[in-house]
Image (tube, rainbow, N blue to C red):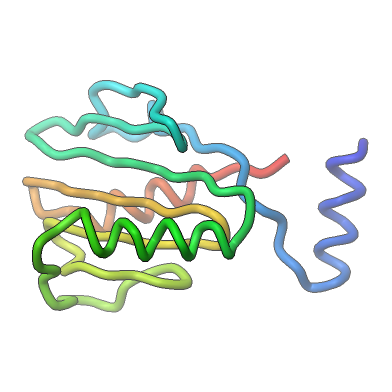
Length: 128
């Protein structure tokens, strides 16, 4: 009941609710899911991985995004398509880093579908 009240209040005020979880196992390309220190991570069929950082606030997610951006890749390829989310980096095919509100999603995909996988993750985000 409190979650519904929060959601209604947040919607009425125009503030979207914070994300609290994600179901990576329901993504067809995912072969294995484990829990990391900041959220779930998954291995991908054909090679690659997804890491999700669920931060307590948008500011904490911005900090996590900046940290991933500095350390996850030596060089970031230029975007090939419009990238989703509030912040994004990468080419959208093999490498993508996206922040959506309080969540940061890192995708490295050897099959060239990083943008589609990031969208699959975003579609499976849940809030309380």
